[in-house]
Amino acid sequence: MSFTIRATDAEELEQGESPAEVAVENALRKARAARRAGRREAVLGCDTIVALDGTIYGKPPDAAAARRTLMALGGRTHEVISGLALLLPDGSAQRTAVARTRVTFRALDEDLLDWYVGTEEWRGRSGGYAIQGAGAALAVAVDGEEENVVGLPLLTLAALYPELVSD
Image (tube, rainbow, N blue to C red; front, top):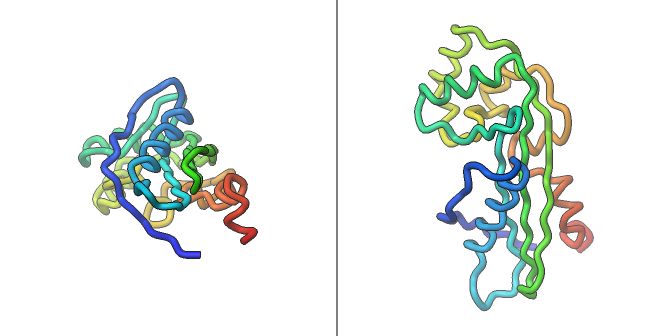
């Protein structure tokens, strides 16, 4: 089985009824934008967001915003939520799923914040961190599907699209 990655310029929602609904809607938008007319192929869209107390923390636009986001997450447990949207090859059906993982951050002091923001690893990252890199120093616990925090939630994908693992 072969896979192709297609970047899209789909417009993403930043807020909505719930963080999970925002993630699923963004995943649907990405999948629809990636679909190629006339091709019989499954198309998967995924969007991952960070939420704390119902507030979505997107990709910080600059270092000051990254610092504010990390300060909000420090010493707290937040959710990493991924919305998956699968458009089936016949073009008539879609499936969606949500993966949720709880991540607990240590209390973040000024020195740790200065160091992490200085790595610039926060760029392009929901919640302003990458747990698979230097951001691992910020977290003390991960409860749930770890792949959801790092990238694509594979267990959720397998449940959404069992044909993928059975073929």
